[in-house]
Amino acid sequence: MKWMALLGGSAFLMSMWVFFKIGFIFFGGGFLLIPVIHNELVLQLHWITEREFIDGVAISQLTPGPIAVLATFCGYHHAGAVCGYLSTLAIFAPGFLLMLFISYGYKKLGNLKGVKVVLAKFTPAIIGLLLAAAIQIGKTIPVTPVTTIVFVVSLILMVHWRLNPVYLIAGSAILGMALKM
Image 1: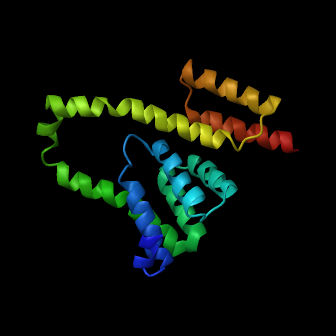
Image 2 (image 1 turned 180 degrees about the horizontal axis):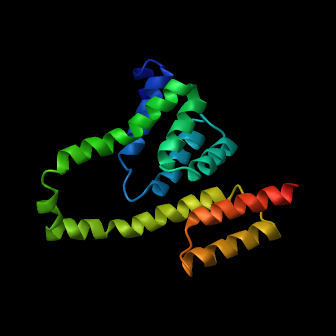
C-alpha cells in the first residue's frame, strides 16, 4: 500500500496510522469497530490471522475497555509491546482531539435541530455495524447443538431479561471448561 511506503516501513508508524484511522469512526460504542478492525488487520493487511483476531476479541471482552485491549492485543501481535502501546494511544487520539475541539460549544450545538436530525440517523448504521460484527464472528464458530443452545439462551437472557453480558461470558467460559474436561 502506498501509505506504508510513505511511513518508511516502520511497524510502529504503520500500526499507529491504522489505529488512528480506525479511531476516527470510534463512536457509539466499541463493538462497532470490530468489523472495521477485522477488515483492516485480517482481510486487508494480514497482520493477524482470523483465529488470532477472535482470540483478541474474546480476551478484550473479559476486561474493561475492550477496544483498547483489542488495539493493544493487535498492535502487540503485529510488532511487540511498544507497538501495542502506540496502537492503543492512536485509536483514542482522534476522539480525544475531537472532544477537545467540540466540548466548548457542545451545549449549543446539541440543541440545534439539524444536529439532532443527523445524530438520529446514526442509529440504523450502528445497528447494521453491530449485526455485521456478530455475523463475522459467528462465521468462525462451529454450529453444534451446544453452541446453538448457548446462542439461543444467551439471546433470550439478554433481550428478555436484560442480563448483564458479563454473566453470560462467565457462564459460557465455565461451560466451555466443563465440556473440555
